[in-house]
Structure formats: C-alpha cells, structure tokens
Image 1 (cartoon, rainbow, N blue to C red):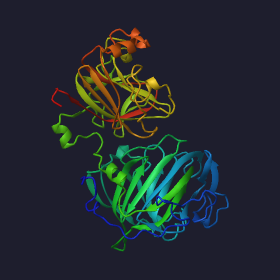
Image 2 (tube, one colour):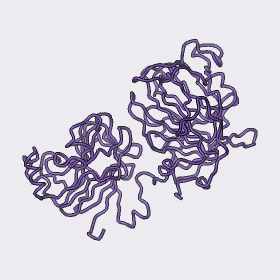
Image 3 (cartoon, rainbow, N blue to C red):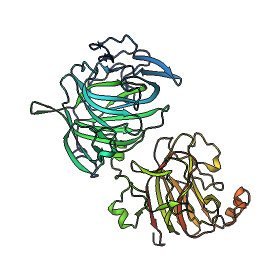
Image 4 (cartoon, rainbow, N blue to C red):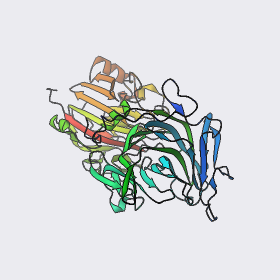
Length: 498
C-alpha cells in the first residue's frame, strides 16, 4: 500500500458501528443528523458573552445564535456568529463517515469582527463545555477563511488542552504563520510529529470563494481522523489520544459539535454513516503523491517538474525577461493574483507529454498554450490552446474546458466544479495532438490536415498568420484577468519510443 497511509491502517477493522440516530438510515447507509425542520437531536452551549459575566450555559440561546433557516431554496442550520459557543449532537459516534456542506455568511462579531471568518467542525467531543467558550474538549476540523479550512486544533474543554495527535508534515517558517502556535503543515510522507497539540495546517487550500457551498468529509477510523475538503484529503491525524497526568488514553468516539466563533456560517445536508473501514475513494485520494514532486517511476520515465512549488524559477512573462509580479508561488501553487500578462517557460518543447493540475475562481477563464513563439503581440495569435474555464459560467461550447481553442470542442464536459482541482494532459507527437481532462480524452486533431484547414478558415483564427505552425516552443499559461491556480506542472519529452 502507499507509503502515505499510516502503518497498519489498511488492515484495520473497526469496532461495531455506533448506534444510528433517528431517523433510520437510508438504503445507502447515510443517517441525517439535521432534519431540516428544527434542532432536534442537538444541544446548544454558549460561553461568556463579550463584555459579560459568566457563561450563557447549556440549552439557553436568548439571542437565537442557532436556528433553522431557508438558504438557496432549502433548509440550513444557521450559526449567527454572535459570541462563542457550539451546537452538539446529543449522541456520541465512533467509526463513521460524516459529510456536510457549509458556506460563510457575511456577518462577523467580536472578538473576531475584523479577522478572517472562523468556525469549526469539532469531533470526538466529550465532557462539559468550557465556560468561557462553550466548546467541548475535542479535535477540531478547522473552518477558517483564506486557506486554512481543514486544519487541526486541540480544543480545550473544562480541563485545558489534553488532546494530542501524530501527523506527517513539515515545519512552517515563523514568518509565514498566520498564528504563532501553528508551526506544522501537513505533508504526507514528511517528518513524523508525535504527540502534538499545537495547530497543524492543512496540506491544500481547497475552499471555494465565500458565498459558495463547500463539501466536508470527516472519516473517523478508530483513533485516526481524515479531513477532506471538496474531495481532496488535506489532513490525516493518527493516534488521537488524551494525555492526563502522564497517562494516555485513546480517543476514538464522542459527540459532534458545530462551532460559533464570531462568523456567520450555514450548514446543510449533515449526515453520517457507520463504516467498517476507510471508503475506497478516500483511500485512493490518500495515495496521491505530495504535490510538485516526482515519483521514482516518473523520474525513470523522463518526467521533469516545470514548477518547484515554491518559486517562479524557469518561467518569465511572454515577450519579457522576468516574471510579472501578478504571478506568484503561493501555498504550493503557481497563482495568477493580479494583472500580469501571460507566462511562458524558459525551456522549449516539441514532442512532449504535459500534465498540469489547475483550478479557477468563479467565472474564471484561462488556458494552456504550447509550441508557442514570440512573433506576435499576443501568445494566442500563434499558439494552440487547451481551454480552461468555469464551465458553469461560460457556456459557449467551442471554448469549453479541454477544447482546442476555437477549433475543436471537447467531446464531453469532464471538468470538476469551481473550487476543485482538475488535471489537464496534453500529448503532442508530430502533427498529432491529444487533450485529456481528468483522465478522459476530450479532443484530438492533426495540424495541417484537411479538417484543421477547414476549421481554421471558418473561424477568426484565419486572421492569425502562422497560427499553429511552430513545431517547437515554450509552454504558456494564460492571464485572462481571473484568479487561478496551477500545480504539479510536469513534462516529459517524447522520442517516438513511448
């Protein structure tokens, strides 16, 4: 099994599943924890109000911090964000797969009125609420706007911080920490940190822009917790335990608490199913190698990285000597953050196979150019383009995701929704080119064929002299005035023997 899986995890058989809450499970095993009508099966707890004296307490909610509302045509559990507290299941659970959707509201309150929106999904919660915060002693699946949804905190109950975990990761330089006590970033296959209760950063930023729903999956397998944000595993905690007076006890079950921490947030489709092992799709996701790295097999096959994950080395602006400031390496991705112009590689490629992970913001538009020249004012006037965009926003099919821009529409829409990573693959051998998206071939064509010539003549491309004529050139990333991300940019030359 993959080296990314904690030792012994694959063979782990769980204890009998926790009893299902009412109503009974559906045919697929999912049990709704939120009925969409009221807060039955949940219990509120609120801490000491800002500027007030003493906690509001359990089962009292004079300001209506927790309520059921209609959002986007359906019921949602609203947490107003006014103060500190939580709403917890009345039952305990162990060995389960929890799935819910959340999105941020607009309101913020002290003590975080001017700070990033913050909340949390607390699990394995137990004991009495902390009188100051209303939170139970628990493990936190953090919800923090701006890149850290999915992180970990050890949440103190009435007895202080006692939950500790093991994790694979890397040190976060002090100057790059949002919070001083968050010194570790999750990285599968990295350094083993044992017995930590400080904050642990998630490995990826997979949260969608504010106003859009995010899907969270929490996999609890014995004393292992797996945090999944919008389909990507971004934190794996192992050996979750409680340390009390020098003694250690495993932590593998408890209540589930949704946190109130100064930000309005909505939750919907909160459901849980008992499991006897890690779901297959989660196992597959956990086996993904670390970003911006090459496996031994890839190295042997001749692959090379075009982006190292930390710098813009090997790139420059189109018809420029340097990289524009609007392109930056951020959190393991090459990101277009401001107006910058198109980006190209220093190196040129003729016959090649290229693999790139990408995601766009809402309404986003971009593309991957290849065999480019610098003979025209704009790169799109000479280089073929693998189209990238938010396909829910842009609906003109000839330019949809995976298309050969303007000439060859994709055979199907294989793109994932905004906020998810997609994988583009381009294979160019002589005059033949294939476009692949998320493992499916969506376009292929022959430079100079009768079909190519007819398509060029029927579009505005006919006005671009020399379009698609180069047999070799740099690879380019398009700036189309939108926030977008690229990572795992890797290429291998093709010699005809593959």
